[in-house]
Image (cartoon, rainbow, N blue to C red; front, side):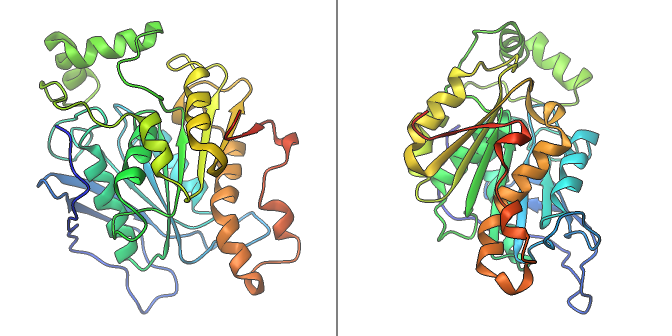
Length: 313
């Protein structure tokens, strides 16, 4: 089910009102290049914000949720709300999830879903796009950035991967063995459809898509942030360290003490640090809009609880 980085068109029937200073939230269905409808939500940047610097007007976060998530799930809405302090936010439901069409390929053709959402975000007038993926979405944002260069309408300017795997077919933890049962067995897919509201495709990958660790070197020179908890029950810390090693100098690793897995384990303080990391380049390019104290807040200090390693860690 692998795909090529060929171009595609995302279609939407709604657009922000150009006569207002802050566009209203939008919800629409996009269409991927392979014809799948993707339920998508646009939240404009907050007017009232808590940070020293205002949201960056041309910045948009495109959030890729984890397996069995959806755009309207509470933990995804919480992430979106946190990021609106720094810019606009696009959330969407991957194929086979929520109100989107199709069936999940568990990270393969989902890059088409993300590309459609990114293209929509650019069509809404945002010049800088940062993709943020969690778990399965963390692997998708890496592969998407490798396949879609910055010159492509569906490409991204920076990437954040939270709790993502480095390699496929990992069964080294009890939780991942359970995930493999859900995905590969008919009875597991039935449980997913009825209990988790996730529809999974029955076909195996053919060919096997580019793995996350193989995708990472192709992202450079775009910035890459890898975030992982040292108590992740799905993917142990060798996964983020493999990704960071593959990234080299263009990658940054935050290994978070006490953090578990994905959106549910990402607290407000960590979301604020990710938001500042994403907004820092744009704020640096527009000093007239940023209060004097803002540059000191653009990069999270070590006292915020996250240990930072460079790409060679």
